[in-house]
Length: 391
Ligand SMILES: *Cc1c(COP(=O)(O)O)cnc(C)c1O
Image (cartoon, rainbow, N blue to C red; front, side):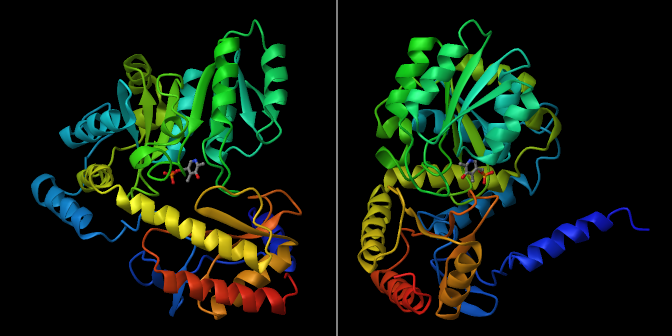
């Protein structure tokens, strides 16, 4: 008797609901038009917002780092893997974010989970938006703190939770800056004011805002001009900055504490130098060429307007992430499959990634898409949407 047999039952359930699927295979570089499963498609699935994943300047930076520094750091940061190139990225990011200090993590996921788990303990409270990212939820679990969840963007409910947490040792108010499945922006000015009123720690996860929102893509704190008022900012290097990694930006005290206590830094190897060098080149490139971000937003407005004019439900999106919400899981998968046949890759997303009854196809445009690419995608959405009676 195979003790893993029970896994098969769960898979059967997925198959019955039409949700069993292996991810499509990318057979080209990550580009706005890419080859998946042998087919050239307009790619509306990547987080390669600025089209940098295959950029010559970044590739050259990675190659040079390999030549000069090798392919691996050889140890965790806190033992022998703390390389000068890691430090350089942190200094560049601190300048970029206008914070005292930053600290690199292996990913945005470990930055969130590792930081939340390090700064909170079981006597503390975390007050969190219901749509916050899984890495925040996991960090909260690892910390042992009491979780209090408020309905999406409901600052009145957040206030009630802060009120009932008076007297608690440490209270963390935490929100995604841009929500990854809906593309809407957190009410950060209101949240910051609440955190200040109640003496809570304010933390924002800017994975989808990094390189997208604010001047030169500095994130939601810059977008809302809240510099100096958010204690912990998490950013990613894996999306707009096109390589791999995450970071925390904040005070020197925060960073000094995390390097001693954040478990991903203590127990998992640091980035290869090529990854750090790529990140450094990406952050510099975006500051030198902010027009790339303008292109991203021009494309965003064009595509979002197009989808809305066709009559799709795009929810509350305000960013390059535009969901096409259809509700039914199977319908979302059918829409995605038929779009793919028509040469457009837009992923179907269902529970548990989004709430039940809110299944959707999610689109993300990039600065690298041409108007022809986006028009082709809109034409496909029109044809398939009509065939499925969605519009
Ligand atoms: C992608 C994402 C992360 C994780 O970032 P990685 O660098 O890919 O690990 C964290 N938070 C949010 C909101 C995200 O969308």
